[in-house]
Length: 200
Image (cartoon, rainbow, N blue to C red; front, side):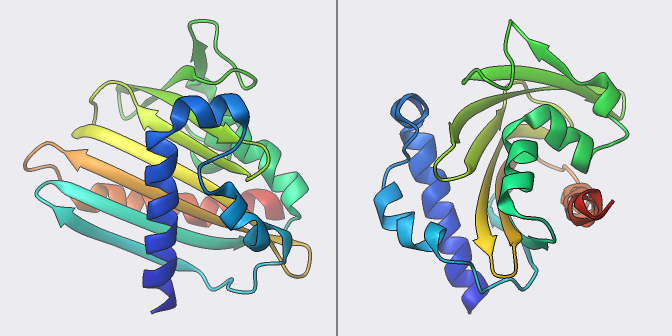
């Protein structure tokens, strides 16, 4: 039940960020951020790992993951906010192919970037980031690997004991016939790699 409630909350935050990208990016404040303030100040006690991966419509999938990272939020946020570092953490095999595009970079929002995987080039864009809320939203720019649309919303919260909770919500719209198990396996591995990255 807690996982379902949390999924609904994160999805709502993700949709708000999508709808308010321009203002939120410029003002460093997501809609309803004040409502989230109490959650961000106190330490997060709900740290059980969760992975929900479910079809929500024809050729549409919603993925929600929550993982506890054994590092303070001050160490985790720089990795999540700089997508180049994040790719290195979750996709170390493709990290050497990472490139910022069109003069973009970690301090510019929006910014496009690309990397290569399985013989394909993925072009994505950071469209929202909040330093206050410790949130980031990324979208796929060009269809690839069966994905027509892809959005990923990352959200960090302080956990008790000087640890960090990472919640990651992803929406995928796929070409008909695309094997969703490929993405389930990929997302599972990524969330094994993230805590391991900070444990090194």
